[in-house]
Amino acid sequence: MRSWPVPLHGNWRADVFWAALGGGLGTVFLVSVWSWFAPVPLALLFREITRRTPADTFKLTWLFGAGFFAAHLLWLPSSLSGFLGPGAVILSALLIATLAILWGLTAALTRWLLGPATLWGLPLAWTVMDALRATGPFGFTWGSLGYAWAPTPLVQVADLGGIALVGLLVALSAAALVSGQRSGRSAVLGAVLLAAGYGLTRPSPPEGTQQVLLVQGNIDPRLKAAGRRTEELTHYLNLTAAGLRAAPATLVVWPETAAPQAPTTAPVRRALTAVPVPLLLGAPTQDAGLRNSVYAVQAGQPLGRQDKRQLVPFGEFFPARTALGGVYRAVFAGLGLPPLSGTVPGTTTQPLALGALRAGILICYESTFSAVARALVAQGANLLVTASNDAWFGPSSGAEQHFQMGRVRAIETRRWWVRAGNDGISAAVDPQGRVVARFPRGVADAFTAPYGTAETRTLFVRWGDWAPLLAGIGLALVWSRQRWLTGRRAA
Image (tube, rainbow, N blue to C red; front, top):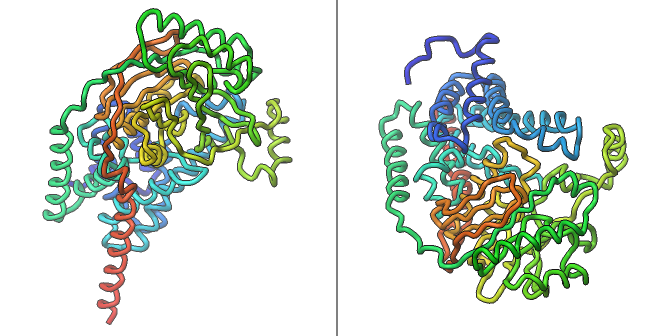
């Protein structure tokens, strides 16, 4: 790659350039065909990192990351303001700064530890970092590099190693654009061409032979937060009845928290006897605390439930709540918000059985986590189902990002994925990630879409996230070799 015609360090214009370059990538990332070109700005970043000290590397990468996440998460303040008020701006800024710090530390540590081998170490380190930040109660997957190629045939290799493997290819491609090593460039180009060929020659899955009714209530989530009403249940029952009259279906899916109470309560159980086909519905559960659940119901009888396991930090759970309860209460009171609430995470990962159907439930935010979908399919799920409420995103790109990330779960597991959202996006996606039916947002209606079931297990389901492990081993080997070479020179 030739030298850039203007200095890219040492003045405020350079700082603005790197933040803007990251912001440009964040704007198109995942939701635009321009996301295909993610390796190009990353290559500029990687090249500059190899010329900087670790301290300068941190600053440079932090600026790039702050610009990236500020643009990519532009929807976040308005989304959080519904329940955090003015505090949403502060929390959003802290999250963006923290994510940028993770990027900066990853690049700076790689530069410090690997020295001349930094360029090829960066893709390995980035893959490990993306995997780590998707792990644990604070897991956050937005901005993982693999999603850059979600619109391309290359994403099909996710059934081999998950979205992390795709991310490794993205980062390696960026390094190859910079590298002067012909052998390295050729190896990466060969891997990318093989991945593209794998995606383009994948056999088409069987057509969906069954029909699912996806019900959108389009209820303002702020009304739900203010207090649940019995009218909500009647609303969903009416939409379901109208949808089933218009077209037959073998399954009905309602969104997250669609019912105001769990179907284990007598009034809701009686009302649900009016639904003549198997139903999956979101509802709150009072069980050792408030839980966000999806129930399987047939003929009014609840057959099982799955609680949400991956909660939204500071939205559905509050870290160190016991120790910091006083601080949280003071902040909430100062912002004029309702008293501190929250939900309890689920502890099990089991498909919900409705006859031969075994539905793997991904409740809203969970659809962005590869590990949750993989665990469900490993337990026998032959269909993935998401109940969601994306109304908090408003008209921003947040809902589209959420949907596109969930679409990759279908590819990783080679399962049909059906999704019902309170105000959308309601859709059906086949095992190749193709959207076979998608319905308009912001309307109250019930939509019929095709779906099918599958029993095969992909390499990713069987082996799990091996790409970050392989990247970690590769990183350790590069570091060991670099230390050995340094020792030889010193001797």
